[in-house]
Length: 412
Image 1 (cartoon, one colour):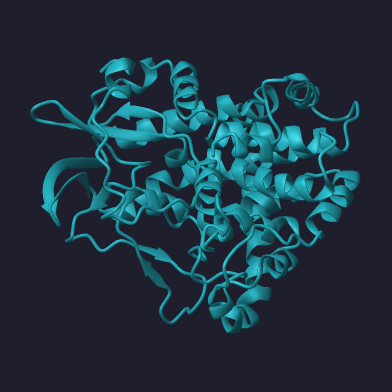
Image 2 (cartoon, rainbow, N blue to C red; image 1 turned 120 degrees about the vertical axis):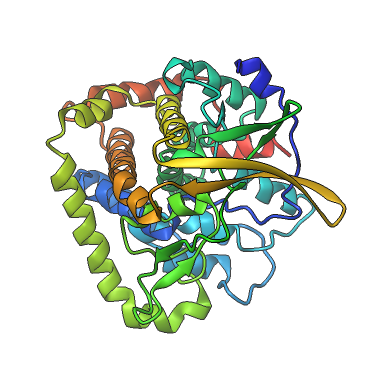
């Protein structure tokens, strides 16, 4: 299937009947990425990052929420690099106010992904796709409202003369979005075709659902006596890093959810230690991997990161040895719904075991690349990776890249 055919597919709007996840890695994965990055920051970078994250942000303009504290209080609770990594996802759970509140919230939400399309069910050879061209085309189609542009504009803000508050917002988004772009199904969109050549998107694999006979769970860090959270689609499985780690599913049991205050008081300290321990373990495992270190050092560009993630998703979806699909068309409340049911040929546990390395690799790549980006912004010197320093200079000099607030305003 050619790129033109894929990009011209019939888009079936099913978000009114299905609740799609817009979170990547959930809180646990993002905190793991941030911890890996923090472990590799220079002392001077740590000081400057901490100063910005400690700033109280009375933003955005939102309605009172039963689950979330006021925005200023939220930023004060999520005031270090690890906790702040979850802040942009928390904002999705408010109702944004003002004349353009809803549009502004949607524009910021769109920064979390770039839905690069590819043909599922082996309709395309993943190795033969020009991923760079396809990601660039998807970015163009989104008019700049995507995760790659969000990363670039966050960097631009931090290197600009924008206010301290705007820089604090941009830093929080940068920490989070670099995590997002490394989640395979936040950089891709598997496209299925039914008989009759009707093609449909799955919105980052949210529309790829599990067979009702399959009971799929993510291990929950809280409540060891319950310990499992039921999920129903492939996107959510990868949100939970396919059970490579014990998760706090976002937004239910997290630091910023007021209904989970008692849980956090009980488990917060041990969870913090768990994040630190697992982040250190993954670094020890992958630090000696030459190929991964070369990927980190030689390609400081979120477009390349997105292409790598999209290709990874393509290979995961088109792995006929592990999974099969049954695309379907049905009616619900008078509306046509398209989707695909996934079946794990050797069981879900086997799938998780065989792919947990990929989840850990993506988390590690995100953490190390984030560290290099932050060091290049806040503590540029000859000891840093000069490719990252040069990339920051190119972003700063590129007049076509807007600061984050201006990028989002241009979408409204």
